[in-house]
Image (cartoon, rainbow, N blue to C red; front, top):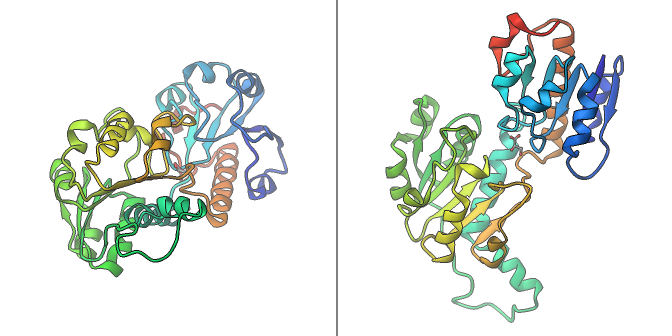
Length: 324
Ligand code: DGY
């Protein structure tokens, strides 16, 4: 079978695939769309990245494709309906990156609350000339209110991390989260109340047509002037222009972002704003998570080739009508 991988990923993936013909786009940037169209023309499997846009047009160029193993937990870059219509299985990489992403969300939250990015730039610029009683004051975290938008795997893990800081936890999700309610006495609330009442807000929703710009100007304006918002999910869940306006106007204390609405582009205005910490979409970027993600992708491809249902399939409906 032919497997096309759109970027070099940890060896774990290719080690499992030695019985097959594996081709890799070995560059340090996303594969150009025209090249990907060419490459998948005779591929049986594709291991794609979240930066590859796999839509109906792309799938029409892949008549033999049986499985797309997306090297990410989020799969908004794949038109899953179009894949299902064509009998193509789509899988993702849940669970193995939960800790890594939740940890990064905490790192961004601390960094934004305590102005680490700003302080680092200041120190490197040689501007530090001694301890100052008013220097870089930030927001304390202990016993504050933490608002979780999206209490799935990563949102839950992130929220459980608040135990060491005795925080009051609110969450917004379509489903009740009994773990959070039992372990943290968390309260399920609507999003408007969450934004209004939280000192720290962390976004953990997948990007869908319903969640796009869920946090628009109207919602963001509900936040406290001392609040900090963190996003490690997908940029477009927040209206990026509105967030920029709010940060520029000093209507919230800060933001910690790992994701951007128009990736790989990033709004230049962010570079002019001091109270935003910018990470380069590294939520899952630990050696442990990335290795395990590679294994999951390889495992999913092999399962599909063997006619077995991969546990991490996202379009289960396809299974009975999948491509032979
Ligand atoms: C994912 O896997 O969807 C994450 O965004 C990676 O950091």
